[in-house]
Structures are given as C-alpha cells and as structure tokens.
Image (cartoon, one colour):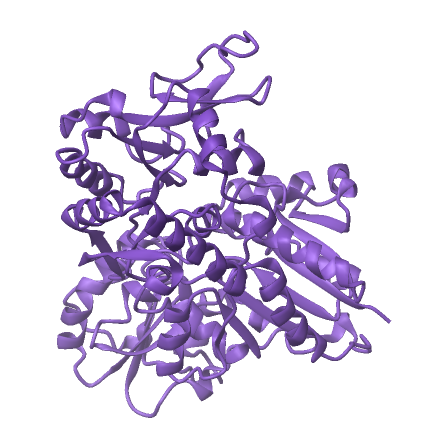
Length: 562
C-alpha cells in the first residue's frame, strides 16, 4: 500500500526556488511508485480547476469562500498567515488523511502547526531554509516539537545542534542537473553573436531583485575590476522594477550603462534578448509585438533551457548576498561549468569552497535593525580581487575548475542524490490508521499555572507589531524600576520574540494566544485567584477593561494607555 504524502510548499508552477525544488522532489517521489503525492500549494485557491492539470493530485491552500476572504482583508497578520496555508491546512489534513505531512517552506509558513491536534498523530517533517545567525527563535520553538526537522544549509544544523537540538539535520535543496550543462566553445561563440557579443569577459549574476542581494557591492567591485579588464561586461539577470534602483546606482557609481547588460523577455513570443537596460514595456524585435518586452521576473521569464543559455554567455558567476537559505542560481551556474564567487556567510559557507569550484568573497558584519540578525556586507575589493583571479587563469585551468564544480553539485545537490536521502527518511515512517475523532481533538491549552513561578509577578500582553514592541521594550526598564520585586512575563506571538528576548528585565517570554486577552483570567476575579498581580494590555484601547490590576498598581504612568 502506498504511503500518502501531503507536500506543502510554494506553487510548483512558480519560478521561485521553493517551487523549483518542490517540483524536483515530487517528480522523484512519484517515479519511485511508492507514494501517493498530494501537492498543497501556497499561492493557489482551494478548488482551483487548474490544479487538476498537475501530474499528481493537487490542491490550493488559499480559502475560496467570500466571507473568509473579506475577513482576511481586514486583518493583515491573518492574511499573511493565510498566504502560507494556515486557513486551509486543517481541512487538507482531514480530507486527504495523509500518512506524512511534509512542509517545504520558510519556517514562518508553519507557525504553530506543532500545536495542532493532528501534529503528533501523523508523521510530520519540516524541511526549511534558515538564512542568518542567530537562528530565528521561531525555528528554535518548532524544532523540539518536530521529530523530523531538516534545514538546507549546514551552518543552520551546526547552530541548532549547539543550542541543544541534536536531531536537526541538513538535507540540501535540489537542482535538476539535466536542465543545465556547458556548451562547447563554438556554440558559446554562436550564442554570443546573437546578441552582438564576441570576446567580452562577462560577469553574471542571476537573482531576484531583493535588498538582500548585494547589488551596490557588486557594481562597486565590478567598477574596480573594470580598471584592469577593459572588456568586462556585467550581466544582471533580474527584474529592474522591484528592489534596488539599479539605474540610479549605475549613475551614482559613474559606470558606463552600456557595460551593464540585462535579460529582456517577450510575453507574446517567449523570446529573450540580452542588452543594456532601456526601460520597461519595450517592443519586441523578434515578433514585432508592442510593449510586451520587460526585464525577466517571477511572473514572466525565461524557461530552464533559455536560462541555461544565459549562464553559457558568462565567463564567471558572482553571487554577493547578505544571507540566504540556499541560493539556487549558484548551483545552476556550477552545473554550466562556471567558477562561482560566493559570499562566505550563511548558506554560502557550503558553496564557496575550492572543492565546490568556487572562490570565497570576504565580508564585514552588520546587524539587521529590529531582529539583530547578523548580515554580510561583501567587500567590493574582494569581488574585484576574485574576478581578476579568474580572468587571469588560463583556459584549461578555468575549464577544469568548472567541471569540478559541476561534479560537486551532482554529488551533493542533484535531485537523485537528495531524493534518495529523503526516500530513506520517509520509508522509516509508519502508515497511519486515522482512528482518532477529529471533533473531540482539541488544541493544547496554554496552562498558565505551569508557566508562572512563585512570587510577585506581572504580565504584559502585546500580540504583535514591530514598532509597538520596540516602544514597549524601551519602557520595560522603567517598569522594572517601578515594580522591582515583580517578575515580568511578556506574551507575544513567537515571530515577534526577537523584539523582546534581549531585554534582561523580562523573566519569561511566552507565546500569545487569544485566550490571554482576558484581564480576569490573568489577574483573577471572584473564586479565581488569577496568575499575576497585575496584567497590562497595551494593545487595548481605552474602551476595553484594562485598568483593574487588583488595586496593586503604582501611579507613575499607565502602560495601558497608548
């Protein structure tokens, strides 16, 4: 009997890294003929008939009833969670009754799933990307409750094991090695001639134009390198409308715009062009369509065959970034025989080694505001230095290093290698009988009596809001001065822990749940003695009961009135 696996991830029709990886894994598992696959796809509506066209059973994760949709529009936090499937996941489990839930997504895509009644009644596995140090608190909360917790990069495993989560393992993301290969020199010359290119030394970067991709650093490094290599060109395969204002950066750094190439794509005839940037909604030189040509993006872009051609236009691949979970273009570039230059931080630690056909890019540390995550700012001088090293290499040595890079990806990141490891994990999981009563199953209640220590105590409840939490955080020193004998307990959603967890005045940081929004539950009333001497609810307005405090409050200020 086949095991039924509900695979929860991004839409496999998308151009995103999660979409590419999940498609590879689903194809691999289906080919084994051992599993029944159900794709539970973020970004697609429940009941969407387009899902019936997939080669496996598929269902959307967004609600389709009007009342729920209208409710989500009024609640940004709830709407964000719904985009990751939280509104429909329970229904998907009930309807499909999987033996295994496999979540392939950012960790916040599974917030509080480990508290759901079905979590420990079926086999479950989280396969997530973590991109920075220190490890996101939400991941540290999820790991102890998740028997099979896998990350894409070894640095995350290392840090979680140090924190006591010894069961966390690295299972890399996948790349389809059949989609990418190195052209012969003759074919590369013919391909270049299509775009008016000949013997230029082309530096490539394939990326979504996000701020964590270090475009200013790369442009500065390229400018330095250009002083030595006058025929250098920089090919930015990205969308120029989102993220960095690339034309402005080029102008600020006084780089010749003709030295910066990009990929244009026609939504009508599906052809692409390589040339300097000249705005959006261009006319197509191939089919003559009007205003159908834009820089490549996640909605309209080149297919894998065309992307392979674009990598083959390059002489070296350079990927500077602040942090990342895997950075799939690095591995695609290696498969095309390119030497890769990679920032030696986060997931880059795995792919910047000489064994992987790469040179590391040095960086300096900075901290992300609010979260205080360590981020890398790649030195432009290191970019220029490593570009010059590749440029000066003889052709044979460059080719040997490129083939070494391809072999390394095949051995460590291919769908077949990673898929086999996943298969071994899944095969150890038992089938599920589903003999439990869904209607009688209840989520675990937050039992405060087990969480509050002896002695005087006070509670602050602030469910969410980065700016509000930072403001409250700054007031806790004053609050502790006012109530020096009281232990302070702070309730907020786990994803907002980083805004509070560094404050020495907080005795315990606890997860928020709607039942906490009850002053009489926390402070007590009638026969119920309560759990805290005082409870503050800064997110309440003045119209709600937020000022009882058992007559124990001091009148320096009212934290409840924001």
